[in-house]
Image (cartoon, rainbow, N blue to C red; front, side):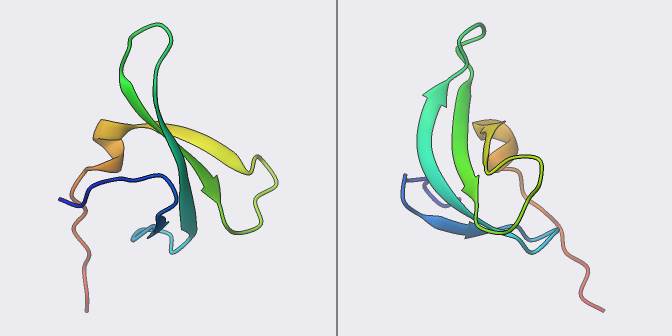
Length: 65
């Protein structure tokens, strides 16, 4: 598993978008580890997002047919 470090650029294997890691943070209520990231593509909803670290580290199976 790759270490997640602010400044890294990651590619979403499901959707193909790229993201820049902004920071690692804690959820204010649960203290769950979170990843704050910036979408490096046009997105009308938001440029900045947060996702639980556990979801960020999930292993994704990709069908290559």
